Length: 55
Image (cartoon, rainbow, N blue to C red):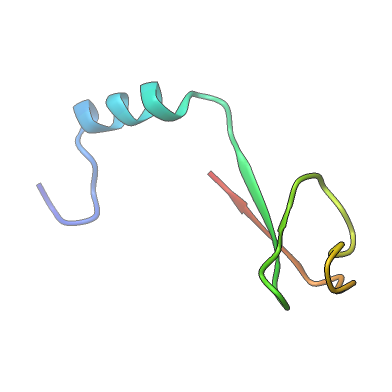
């Protein structure tokens, strides 16, 4: 198996652990605070530079 490529079996195990629905993580790029909901500004520092990571 090549590095960085998951086999079909490993991918299926990962889906069972994580689930099939897509999840997102929102984080302020200025201070690193994790946002619980989709917001336009960080509740900690007020920055509007929010990163969204979809899994």
